Each structure stands twice: as C-alpha cells, then as structure tokens.
Image (cartoon, rainbow, N blue to C red):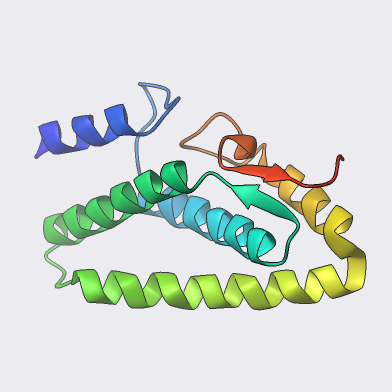
Length: 133
C-alpha cells in the first residue's frame, strides 16, 4: 500500500516529495477547488477540468485508502455524496459573495487560496479568473 501512496504523489503536480498527504489537507484542497468550480459556474473564471478531475480521483483513492487503514467502512458513493454536499455549500457561499462583491471580489478571495494550496504550487494551476486582480 505504501507504493499506492507513492504513485498518488507522482500523479499530483508539483508536490514536494517530503510532503505527507493527510485528510485535513485533502479536504481543505477539495473545498477550495469546489469554490473554483462555483466561480466558473458564476462566470467569474474558468477551471482546468483535467487537473481538477485528476485531483478528484486522487482524493477518492486517498480517502478510501485512509478509511481502510482506519478500519472505517467508506464507500465511493459516500465520498460522492460528501463531495456533492461540499460543492453545493461552496456554490451557495460563492453565489452570495458574488452578489455582495462581484466577480472581482470573489476572485480576490480565491487569490487568497494561493498561499494555502498543498498539492499544487498555485491555485492558478486549477483556475483562471476572467478579470485581472
């Protein structure tokens, strides 16, 4: 199984080899990516779908593997349901933010994610805003 995790590291672009994957960081990165997807739906920018799909696959595999190590029964369907709830939650929050501060403000919030990304060098590897900051 340690080889499985090593392969996951190879799939995620720009990971520092000394970095250790953990659930908290994976969930945080997924929440940020859900905001990027919401921003795209709200016409504030565009996401790199291939990179996001790759991260989602790694997220699912990592969560299933972690659950197995912890003797937790977790299914792909439960992960899907969780991810859908996060997407909806982030869409609602992003919609409300856009109503208050517009796309430029929403993209400024997304710009703050740039210092928090763990599995990529920059949020802009996943997202390109339509307006300039």
